[in-house]
Amino acid sequence: MPSTTRRAAAAIKTPAEPEGLPQPLPEPPVGDLRLETVLGALSDPLRLTIVRKLLLESEQFDHPCGWFGLDRPKSSLTHHFKALREAGVTRQRQYGLERRSQVRVDDLNERFPGLLDLVAAWMPEPQ
Image (cartoon, rainbow, N blue to C red):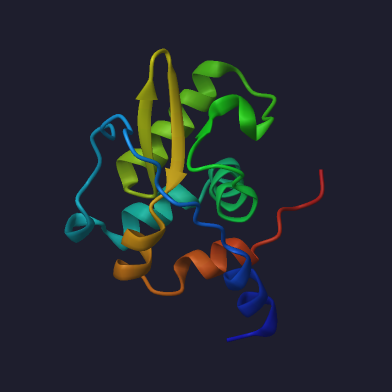
């Protein structure tokens, strides 16, 4: 494993799950996760950025859409977060009117070892 991937893997943050969480929104079970579906969801640079930010910068268990600081229309962001959830990359929970996301780290590591290390090591193109 290249040293940059090892460093990124060590930097992946997985905050502890607090008690009393709302049930997750519908998502595929870990056994049904398909590599081509996960890679399809991660093929969009914005979605890849979302997942990378969750992996490396999580400050709490899950995060609302506004935490990402993305300058996109709400409808566009809703589409991207839904694509990640339906592919099995993220888990979302509904808190009143707000949905919060987290990466399914354990599930993805079980099905596709090393994939999240690659995502964490990816560097977006400078804007």
